[in-house]
Image (cartoon, rainbow, N blue to C red; front, side):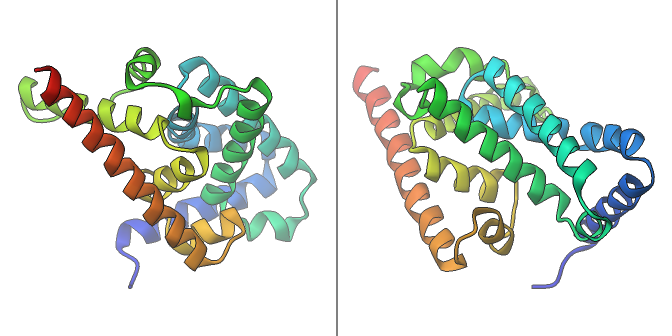
Length: 207
C-alpha cells in the first residue's frame, strides 16, 4: 500500500531532526522533545493509568534517549527510525517501572481508573458541546477498558490503533515476527471488545 503525502512529510521532518542531532545534539534534542512529548506522554498514560506515573515515564525516557544519542555513531543516528525508537524506550521504561512498583493497572476497575484518565489532555473538540461530551465519554471508557487488559495486549493495541504504527514497525519494535504481532493485536481487540460489552451489560442491568 503506497504511503500518503502526510507520511512522506513526517519522514522528511524526522530525517531533518536526525540530521540536526548530528550537528547540534542539545539544540535539536529540544526540538525532538517538543515534537514528541505530548504523544509519548499520552502513550505512557494509556499504559500506566496514572498521570503522575506517565510524567515520570516520559521524563525518564527522554533522559535515556538523550544519553543513547550522545553515544551513537553517526550512521546509527542517521538511520534511526526515530518515532518507533522513542516509543520503544517509553515502552521499556513503563514495563520496568510497573513491574518494580507492582502496580499492574490491568487489575484496576473502570471506576478506579477514572480519576487519572480524566486528567489526560483532550484531543480536538467535537462539533458542538453535546457531541464533544459524548466523544469525551467514549474516549474515557475506551481508555479505562484498555487498562483492564494484560499489559502485552494493551501495548500492541495502543501502538497499532491509537498511535498508528504499522505492523512492520511494531514487529521491529517488539522484535517479533509480524504474524505474532498480528495475532497479539487480534487477541487484544477480542478481549477489549469483551470488556466493553461487559461494561455495557452492567450499565443496562443497573439502569
